[in-house]
Length: 90
Ligand SMILES: [Zn+2]
Image 1 (cartoon, rainbow, N blue to C red):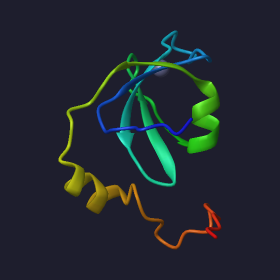
Image 2: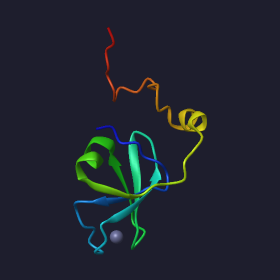
Image 3: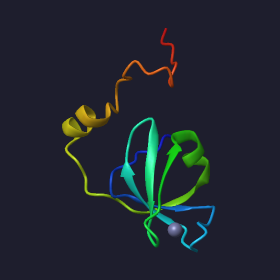
């Protein structure tokens, strides 16, 4: 499953932060996803595949962004020459 993340999403993770919270705000999108703890505001960067394994649920969605803007910002449909994804089309 491909996660469609937005800035402002609130994710519930399987693993509890030492402060006791399991809910995190999405604050940065990219090769790594930036999360901020809802309770203590601690920030972490986590790579997308790891995050996908740890997410229990998305409990709140961020404000929808115009798809054209979202694509310009995050390149949701095209790869930016990053070696992370290596898809072959034939
Ligand atoms: Zn915390």
